[in-house]
Length: 148
Image (cartoon, rainbow, N blue to C red):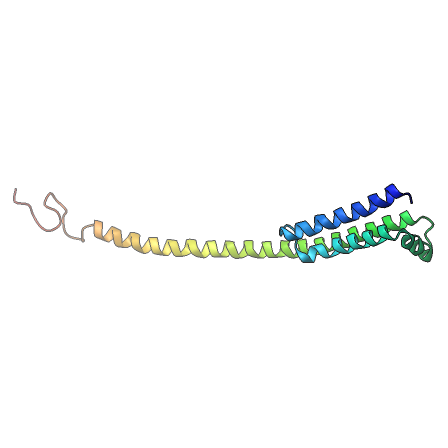
């Protein structure tokens, strides 16, 4: 590994860690979601500082090219993160469905209560506006005949 690629890999690893830490600091990423990204960033930093370590791991596993091991590890991290997000998405979908059902039930109950309240108020208001039975509502009103 030449000096430029060595320096580039260290800077790229530090930049990746910096992005994750900054997003954590600004609360744009939760700690539980950042765990895998931080682990990958630290692993990349360690392997960038000690490139012989990646070659030794590749030999240990039986992979001829150390870069293939790095790509495989990267894909493995992305796979784990995707599975984690899929599980959380499933939980959130269940919660949204449950909340939508509870909201619909609450809306139906509210409408029924409004119907009951307006139904009773409407009947009371109608009784006030309508004269009692048997009393004619003439020019003098329901209280009695007029002095015409």
